[in-house]
Length: 471
Image (cartoon, rainbow, N blue to C red; front, side, top):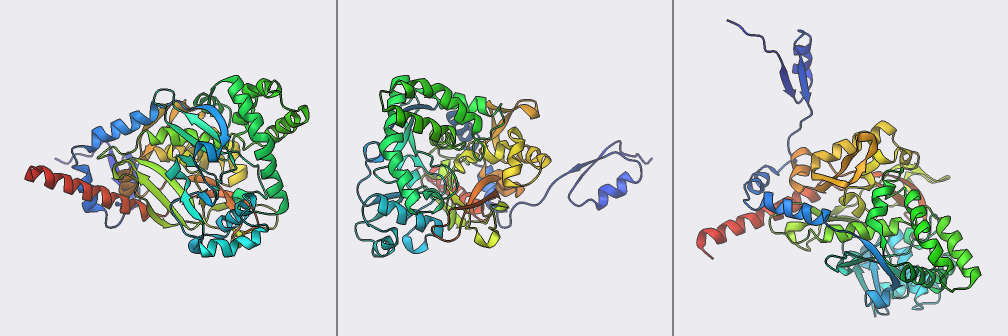
């Protein structure tokens, strides 16, 4: 006797599903594709790792357990121990010779800011010689920096702390948009603004934070996601809530009233100001998940304008890198794709933590800045759940029935599905000195995830051999 199935599940191309549906048989279509090429054996090895499941649970729980509070604002020379000639930058390690235009422009401006050269153009020879110069990733010093990510000794830093553990992370103060150092601009107006930030903005904010007491940055992130921000390219609500908390203490700080007015106007007129608190809050949470043997969770995504790199909990401080991609998005004025530099900045730490591009559904208005459509934003947040270990109940998406944001990028899930993390980002000009040229959407280079998977598989094999030999 022939039995007609009551339901058919079809994976892959639609030819079979269409034929079944034409015969009035219900069919469930499953989006499926083979794993990334060459990853099959490594996926099998890591899947069989007896440590993986518990290690990933520990990593996710450690991250979700962190509370980030703003406890101070102080110069990088004090809180990071930066010395003359030391420069921190975004992304994985890089030398001057490989540096992109915006990173070079930021370094040139920063050298003038620190008095190493009189004219930023003179810094080219200084960096080419390498004499008395040291470049180091922000991530290596408990810090993150947007776009070029430049941090120098005289710059003032936000200091965030987890009250339970005392661990700290840091980030510079946000300059605003357009022709700014982090986008590679270094004209006189850029340096003048940075000097004002060190002379006025930093000290006023420091007095306010110390007078007010710790500011709950994680709590503000929770609220701003309910108010139309996604905490990467939209931070308007977060900035206003920070102002609400600190404005009375700023007024009562004892500083010159003119300086107080300038600070309030600067922060209030800079919708991106809170980004530089969201980033170190995310790093503080993700750093708690580092160095857990067997964990396949990504703890950092960062770009230096030439390479895109990731770090994984179970592989320590190793960077897995590939060429940074160009973002696809909207451009300012007469700029176009030929003017844009490949992806740059530490700000993808927000996506690594589950916000930014992963939480685009919280901020439908973001598509007007980075391109795409509102349905695209909703679909992106749903899709990111396919490559993550869990959800963050603290950070939720109202339009998706308050579902927690997708959290804990899993290297194995990325390799198995071929789905890449979605990042929304600003775009810097390709040439040094240009500044911002647009904003858009970008993904990491696909090859970095199989590289990380191979390292995880090798560690699994080595651990198995040690166990079998009793070593």
